Length: 45
Image: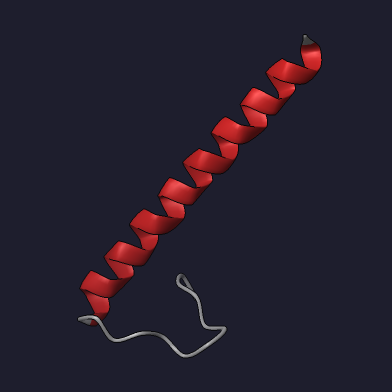
């Protein structure tokens, strides 16, 4: 029972983090006009 709850929490956390990363990528595309950043360069600096 505890393992199932732990798995659900981890899965929810991973899904939330993925949504945040997708939102950040979308905002970055908006700010850069669709130009991609050089490999390995991430915002914020």
